[in-house]
Image 1 (cartoon, rainbow, N blue to C red):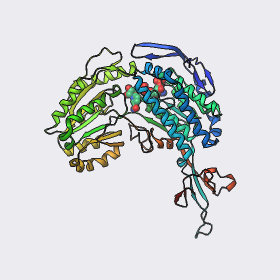
Image 2: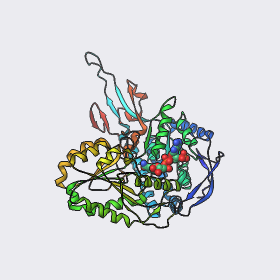
Image 3: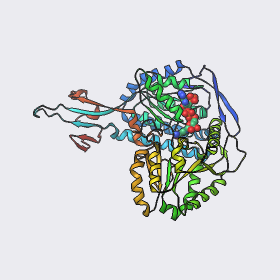
Image 4: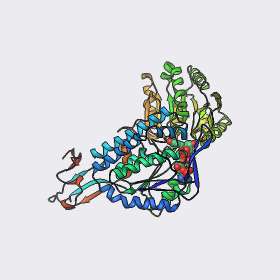
Length: 526
Ligand code: NAP
């Protein structure tokens, strides 16, 4: 399929006239063809108006049609074949094998949501039958179901050009909920975005859905994204990226005449606690595996373990030395974009210059363009608790080890931390007493708590939580990965004494959709 540099507004391909931009090959430090036309406020307006027009017919279409639509997107993405892999590889410098894996995850995610749509538990169909004879007052017939909120704006992330982008988790969950989607293409993978956008556009046509169910907008600078979030037809926003970008969108959304929710996934250092029993028994092995996790994918994961917390003791130095030796062998590699590489280099330089922080290891030079040299730092809890900037995320292959004098200090550090996507405990049975003390705090801080694992790698499943208190996300009640991501784009409606003839299918007495429902307090398919 030819990449044309056009936006996809409903069923049309439209060349933007508000300036131009190009994709970039970070490995060769070169711009890539073709030229993309940037959209204007009028283009945003057209996409949002089409989305608003599509909303009622789309949410009213049979659930089976919605599920088939999601499956058609998955098939069309697979049908793009090597061209998609090649383009994403060139635009992001991520290895082809990684992109292939990400495609599998993206397709699997769409299929998961298709099965969810068919199964229908997310509708939360609930019926409280009328009690006309109840004293002192009768009870009305009350029936609840969830409906989609309306058109959703999606901002993909640079580090997952497929799984967190045009057809990623935000788009898949919003479409599954019954919301039309307008995506703002990430400037770091414009060609990949167009290819995937065309796969979705084709699926809309194949399934006979209204054209406004999906649009893809391109922007040069922040203006297009700002206009999208401010547009009255947009009812919710999904975002993955920087804390600054996420907060800018939260600010715009909250100042609208009608404020709307923004589900922004932003910043997390993913604390990694090595408890004393684990340190004594497996310290060196944990240190090596931790360095592999920090440097995986050039450290460009939101779940990268950027903070290690250990107790001072006879095995601590071995842990630090092993990690330093392992990290020193890791080569500098090309990052996603020149901007991300320079932000990483500046953040590492700042941390190296921070008093009380020791630079214990750095990786080896490699001649890679847009490079990130792995870096490992060491400090103690007193310094860490005194310098707020030590908790800042460094997006890339860097981590900070914090040593604590005793258990109380470790618990204090845990209590001091900002909100996180993950918290990890490396532990042995003799650490369980300390783990029990830490867990209530970690539950308050993180969306996912791991034992004896590494936080990089997020399963797409029913029980996954990829979220957490601020600044991990702007709304800790939600996840952006996994089946319950759909809840972000739904809201409950209660129907009181509505005549049977007017009830939605999900709430009819005969349960034609065969849904699991809470009927007078009992869960069943009745
Ligand atoms: P970003 O700069 O926040 O950009 C993400 C998307 O939001 C882009 O489409 C961007 O497009 C748009 N945007 C950013 N600021 C905006 C604003 N003020 N108004 C309107 N739209 C805005 O994130 P990124 O480019 O993916 O990566 C940059 C940094 O984000 C990294 O260095 C890292 O620190 C962090 N990051 C975090 C995660 C995570 O999972 N938490 C993932 C990736 C990156 P325009 O620039 O065209 O407006």
